[in-house]
Structures are given as structure tokens and as C-alpha cells.
Amino acid sequence: MSISKQAFDRHDHSACVVSALDAAELLCARHGARLTGRRRRVLELVWRSHQAVKAYDLLAQMAREDPSVKPPTVYRALDFLIAQGLVHRIESLNAFVGCVRPGQAHHEQFLICDDCGTVQEVEVPEVGRSLTKAATSAGFQADHQTIEVHGRCDTCCQPASRR
Amino acid sequence: MSISKQAFDRHDHSACVVSALDAAELLCARHGARLTGRRRRVLELVWRSHQAVKAYDLLAQMAREDPSVKPPTVYRALDFLIAQGLVHRIESLNAFVGCVRPGQAHHEQFLICDDCGTVQEVEVPEVGRSLTKAATSAGFQADHQTIEVHGRCDTCCQPASRR
DNA sequence: GGTCACTTGATATAATATTACACTTTTCCG
DNA sequence: CGGAAAAGTGTAATATTATATCAAGTGACC
Image (cartoon, rainbow over all chains, first blue to last red; front, top):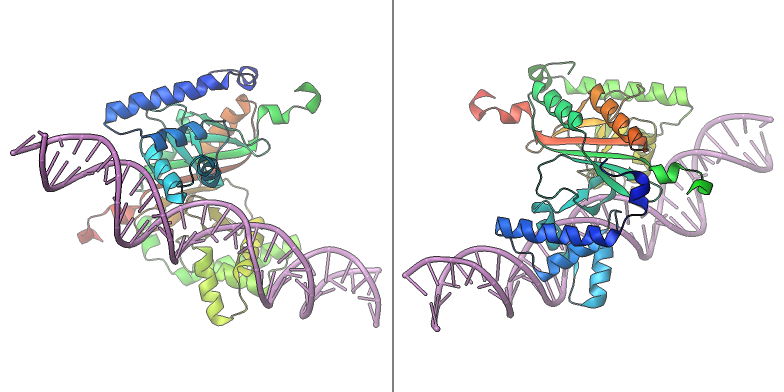
């Protein structure tokens, strides 16, 4: 972890959002990809929290602002953001989170709290390495790894009195 | 891997099915769980191949035999089999495979061929260990790991002529 | 034989995701 | 500039995956 759990719990989240959006603009510009209004809005909503967001929750929020937003609107934007590496899909939740390391090559590894829903993206290089190695020795050519650890986060493990 | 890829490609699959069903009977007896007709049938169908099976494919097959089979029938049986550790859910496919090590504690780790759909369950102890360790040091109490590697299996990597 | 827990049947519906086609906007080349 | 091609979006319909609810059946055990 780059920051402590305490720091995380009290962090200024608006800064996360701003930096995520800035990074997205930059990355898209560099890749010649268009971060349109819809896509930007979806990314912004995904970044509302560090919990995984459901596509239909995004849909509900966006449809309130503009009734022309329909499921394909959301899924297309998500597909784009995922292709750009700005958003990750959490398979075990059918939900989505903002990528904390856009633009840097990394395996997708997540700690998912089943209590509060917080998704923490981590980087444990050995895991990717061991898996790729094991796959290779089985004659398997690994393209993509889905690594999702469920459990309870630090905060949710604490007795209530200590929070 | 306990057997070679070549051996696997030509293996006598009916033996897999028989041994899976036998192991299931044994395990359920030991746990005081009831492997009813429905449940047994679902397990059998899951074991039809080493590919992940969709719930609605199971449903279609079973409904052909008995029209009273409905989605809950299948999902309940799958829930039971998963709880008994006889079947694993592949999150990234919304599909199910038979467990090759029922009764033995293990992390669920899979190599999934995106060409032929074959799912190979593997055991790479370091991966589970590294992940748990990383989680712990982040104050996270890990309960369950979802590890699914997508790519191309040995057979599908071979030029067609060599198959 | 009664009762309790578990299992199943049946109906309905919720939640997640995609297809298809028309239309608009942007790009970009001559 | 103008206009064709590509990319993005709107719209409607539908496919796929999964669960809730309540009633009825089944087997285990005293």
C-alpha cells in the first residue's frame, strides 16, 4: 500500500476524482481516443467512491439527468473506459471500479471487502509472476488474470468502538 | 499438472464422470448432506466436459427430460454442489465446472482457454500464499480468492497440423 | 404416527447485458 | 472548403443470468 489505512479512511476523495479525470484526459489524448461527455460522466460516477459500482446504478443516476440514457449508453462507455485501462471490471461482483494506475502496465488484483464493499487495487508482483510461470509450464499462454480476494478490510475488522 | 497434456487430450472422460460422482457420494455421506437425484443429475451434467457449463444450458438439458425443471431447480442444485465443494463457479464466465479435488482444501485457481473453453484447475501454492500475505499486511482478512487466468491452452496454441 | 427440517415445485420478476438499425458528429483527405 | 468514412450515440427490443416467494412434498427421527 502506498498510504496507510487511517489516511485512506479520511482521505480527500474529491482529489481522487480530479486526478482520475485528469489522468484520463491525458491518457486518451496520448492514445488518440475521445473522452466524450458521456464517457467522462461515467468515469466520474465510477469514481464517486472506492466501491465497485453496478452498471444499472450508473444508468439510474445518468437517466435522472437525461432520460435518453439507456443500458447501451452505459455499457458502451464502460467498454471504452475498460479498453483504455481507466476502469476495471470486478468479475465476482458484476461491477466496476476506477483504475488507480491508469497508463501503467499492471495485473488487476483486488481486495474486496464484503462488509463495506470497498475495493482496493493492489500489486503483488509475485502473484502475477507465479501464475504466469505455472501457466507456461502447463503449455498455457496467459493473456489476462482475474484476481479478486474477498474478505474484510481493516476498518471492518476493527471493533466498532475503535472506528 | 498431474497428467500430461497429451494424455489429457485423449483421456477416457467417462472415468472422470464416474470418479466425480463416486467422490461426491462419499463426501456427501461423510458430511450428512443429501445428494438427491436432482443434485446428482446436475453434477453429472457439469461433468459432461472439462469446459465451464452455463446454468441455462443445464436447465435446457434437464427440462428436456422433465419439464418441471425451472431455473431455481438448477441454481439450487448448483448452490448445494458449490457449498459441498463439488463444483466451482467461474466468475469471469458466469459458468460452472466440476471440482477436481473435492474434499481437499485448496484455493480455486483456473486456466481458462478462450479458444476451446477448457478449464483446467491448478494449484500454485505460492499464489495463494503471496496473496494472503499481501492482504494481511494491508490489514485485510482474506476469506476467498478468485483466480482465473484467461489465455490459450496447449492444444489451441499448436498449429492445426500438429494436433 | 407426528413433527421438524430439508427439499422441491411453481410462478413471477429482478438484475445484468447485448443486438440491430437509424441517425448524428467528428475526422480527415482531396 | 466539401464530402466520404469512421466513430459515437439514440432507440427499441430482447437475450441472458439470477432470485424472491409461497405452497407442497419428502425423509429423518423421536
